[in-house]
Image (cartoon, rainbow, N blue to C red; front, side, top):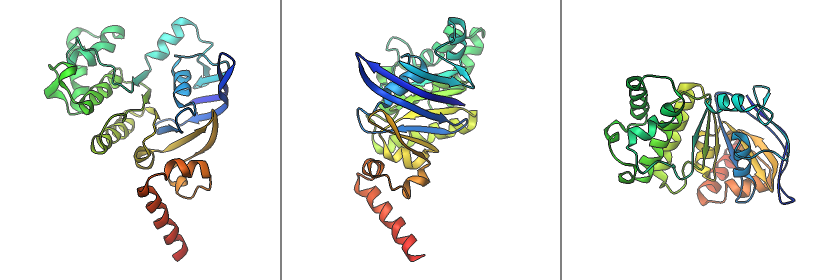
Length: 257
C-alpha cells in the first residue's frame, strides 16, 4: 500500500500541495482528479520521486521513500512502471526495442529471454505485428499501447499513469482504459492514474481522490460520486451534458423508490 502523510510541496515559497493525506489501495485502479492547477501532477511526481516533499512522507508498505538510500531507491524503481502523457517513446528504436529498454537497463535476463518477455507484453496490448516498426509510424493510440507494454515489461508492483488518454479520441481512450483495468487485475498491480477524463473516472475508477487547490477535497468510489453532495466535485464530474443526464436518471430512480 502507498500512503501519503501530511505531504506538502512548495516552490519558491508558494505552497502547491497542502497537508495531503491519502492511501492508494493495493490491486486497484486509484485515480487522482481535479481541475488544472489543483496539484495532480505535482502529487504524482512526489509519489515517484521526481520531486521531494517539502514536508511529510510517501510510504511504500511503511517504507519512507524520501529517506531511502540510493540502493534502496533503485530497488523501488524496479518495482514501478510509468506511462507518460506523451508516451515518451524513443524515435531511434523499434517498437520491440522500446519495450525491451527497461529490461536492457535493469534485468539480468539473457537477450533471448528479454526479447520473449517484450513480445509477450506487446501481445498483451495487441501490437505484435508492429514490433519492427518505428514509433513515428504509429498512431497516438498505438504509441500509448506501446508505452503500456514497456511499463509492464518488468512486472511492476506499482503502475503510474500521467494523463494516459491525453490527446486521444473517445473510442481509443476506452481501449486504453480497458487495457489498464485488465492488466491491473491480471498482474495484481496497484495502479495510480492522474486524469481529467471523466469517462475514465466513471468507467474504471475504484478509488478516487479529488484535489482542489492543493488539498484533498473528497475521496470515494465511482459509485459514491453519484450520491456526492460535494459541489466542487459535482461541478467537475458532471460538467458535460452526458453526466448531468446520468445523475438526473439516478435521482429520478431514487425518488421513485
